[in-house]
Image 1 (cartoon, helix red, strand yellow):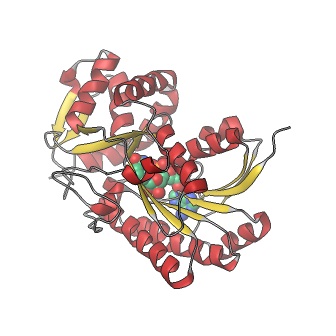
Image 2 (image 1 turned 120 degrees about the horizontal axis):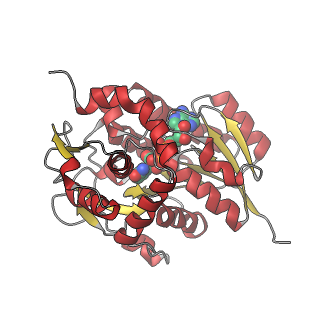
Length: 335
Ligand SMILES: NC(=O)c1ccc[n+]([C@@H]2O[C@H](COP(=O)([O-])OP(=O)(O)OC[C@H]3O[C@@H](n4cnc5c(N)ncnc54)[C@H](O)[C@@H]3O)[C@@H](O)[C@H]2O)c1
């Protein structure tokens, strides 16, 4: 029988990226414990293939006593901290859950991990903490300059990690991935919104003229990078993870419509998001030097994600029903 690898505690494991990480980690032989509050964005369906191989706690990461008890009981070799409020538009409507989960939740996890001397802590941050870059790419030593409430709370969490590393030799590593896409993404983010709206023949809201540039990374390439950093990353370091596939949003929308054979007339330009960052781009040389290379091209990744969306139309459209009211407030606000 294959030897079991160390035990990992994954926060936010019922979310889009972390559930992909959990499925992959179980496949590789890790024992996995998941903590998730199951907010609107969490869904255990994503963990169905591994549900008998993991331990699941429905818990909020800001509940210090509960987190402490779980770490004491489970004795993980590493914590992978993915849990967050993640949608920029929601943070513009109400920042309070972002402050609670992304800042207070991260502080609670740092305290509990220190208390139980967890040997490694991988903090999942985002490229958005750097702010926008009209030309060139951010390196790990670029200054943080977040421009929206979501990225501001993520940057605050990065600073808390940095302070714990410096003051207490906290064994943490920060990972900053670019925009992820792939199966099981919640349909409030660009790619699944376009897929779902296009498949149901609805208008597709595109902010401004769709000229913002995003760097796309397939979720399976992202989780491979996190797994590599877990074993080969250096404590106290930051690692950017990006595939250097920058596209204007309108190009991404048109690519998806063409893959699905849907008319581009479905595109509807709407009032731009306030303070919208114009361009993100990461220099990922540092993680490439650890041996990581993205395996999935933008074109191939979008095709397989579109095929997944066709097969999982019911899952996506169930979420759509929950989102109707929210979309009205975000994309079509009252004058
Ligand atoms: N999606 C992207 O493109 C992207 C890019 C870069 C970085 N990230 C970062 O990666 C991580 C995962 O992003 P995602 O898009 O997969 O997220 P997601 O929104 O799909 O999932 C977040 C998960 O966290 C859980 N959660 C939220 N608040 C919690 C709390 N207080 N306690 C416990 N669980 C809680 C939710 O229930 C959900 O399962 C986040 O830290 C995000 O900032 C995401």
